[in-house]
Image (cartoon, rainbow, N blue to C red; front, side, top):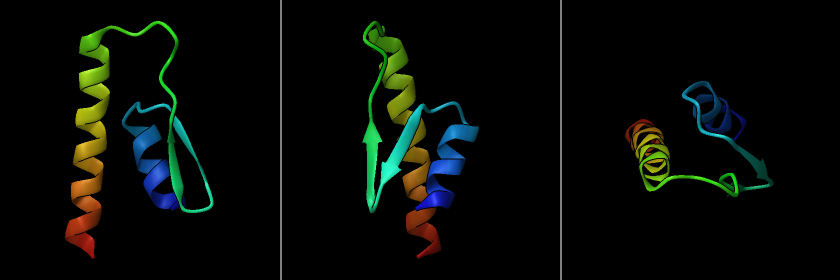
Length: 53
């Protein structure tokens, strides 16, 4: 889990984890474009994790 969070943060995705959960907590003020960009980062990282497993 630490590796996944590290990669997300390295790519600019603001997050943290608790046990086996990834906490997604965007800023209170965020544009739709910023949100879509962040979710694209999440999709990319999780696809990479799936490929490793």
